[in-house]
Structures are given as C-alpha cells and as structure tokens.
Amino acid sequence: MANREEDKLEQAKGNVKETVGNATDNKDLEKEGKADKTSGKMNEKIDEVADKAKGFTDKLKDKFNKDK
Image 1: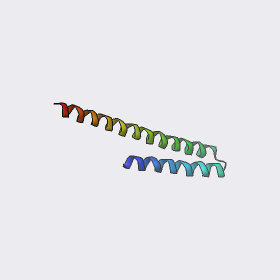
Image 2: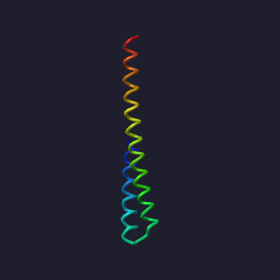
Image 3: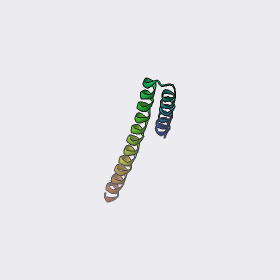
Image 4: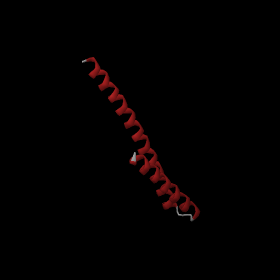
C-alpha cells in the first residue's frame, strides 16, 4: 500500500506548508499546503474505492468460476 503512504505523506507535507504559511502570513504557501492536503485526501479516497471495486470483481470472478 505504498500509494496510501504517499497520500498520507502528501497530506502531512500540506499541513506543514499550510501551518508555516499561516505563521508567516504567506498566503501562497498556505494555499499550496491546502491544495496538497486536499490532493492527498482525494487520492486516498480513490485508492479506497479502487480496492473495494477490485474486491467486488474478485468475488464475482470466484462466483462465476464456481458455477462452471
């Protein structure tokens, strides 16, 4: 699950950027941090949906293979 680790890392990186941007009144860095966090969260959700879809298709394959 390297993708999930990368997604979490992107979220953490975004959190740091947002915090530093907020502390230094750097609105661009703050926005970049928010974007990184959002991107990481979205990718994490996409990975979850992909895993569920794969599990579903695997079950269907098993069902059809047993019926043969």
